[in-house]
Image 1 (cartoon, rainbow, N blue to C red):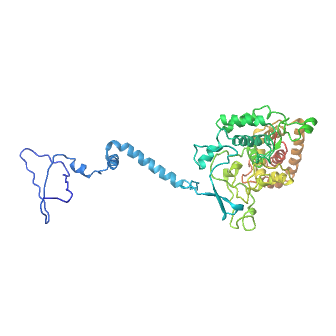
Image 2 (cartoon, one colour):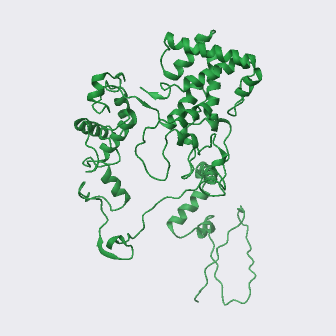
Image 3 (cartoon, one colour):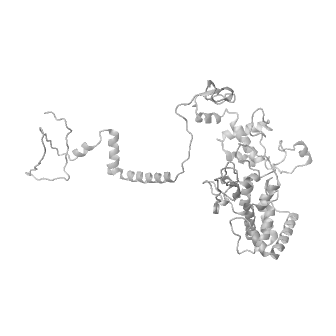
Length: 454
């Protein structure tokens, strides 16, 4: 007899314990069959073993899901799977670049026209700068390896020059955007080479590089000039004195927030929208007619300028007026500007008006008991030095004049205090006195020394 069907393995739902002499009767009710073969066994796992997957990998996975010894591991896996699901649900999606499986062919375009292809060219960095790395892939990873290779003559030098420009105002190579034949020659070539090698040997440690700059004798020189150095080194290319320049636009705003105590130093997170004129957005503004400006609130108004949200055609108004470049083109250095509009921004922009008022409150609470102590405290916050006696005398005269004006017209003092910013003035302080201190703090912050690095 030949049986073509798969055998059916049956097991008892419960173990039957029989005594000697007992019999078990098995009744099978079947239809029309040709024959049947029955085999019994005392192995209680026969039915279970018959139900297991035949493939080794599936059988192992089955035991991982069923065996009691894996109970803790299964519970831990379930917990982490739920956490992963929650994290992925909260995460923001972003586009990333990836390499195509089969690189496309590149052609030399005749006269630059995309539809007139010439000979096929190989994907490779310019060999005139440094030879191609033979063991590196021809993709973005290969380009990164090529750029950061120790023998590359440009990457470390360009990076060091940019950081030098940030600290000293002008790079060792003044044209930081052009190291080619059209750019300026380095003022101190050996220094640039040394710093580039040291930067690579430190594993590209930016903090160590900046520490080396600011602790150097060159940086710690006084910024005073005399007639001789002005004639021989008018642009300070020979580093005959310490650098003196106005702070960058973002630094000016951050400086105002820091000395007033408003700066929120939270790191990371999405961009924020501090005070800006709403007229820059909408139908009559540059860009989309549907663009709207939703001003942030709370701590987001006082985040570092690094987190200020910029649209390409609608930059932050106060940053733009203070010298920040637009985002339409890439710029490696900014031109030094000094215009009347910048003074108007520092005197009237809500961000700076509010900072001056909060700085006045801080001076009253922390500066001392007398006006001279409080004004000296505010001056030192803004300039990082103590005021001289003539300077303090001028500040006291200005304070007394403002105090008399505001005491004579308390309503104007209250209007002045309510003139800028979301934060309300301290109710427990005298309005006329606070307004007078706020006006003088605004004056102090507008001093050239307050917004300059020297």
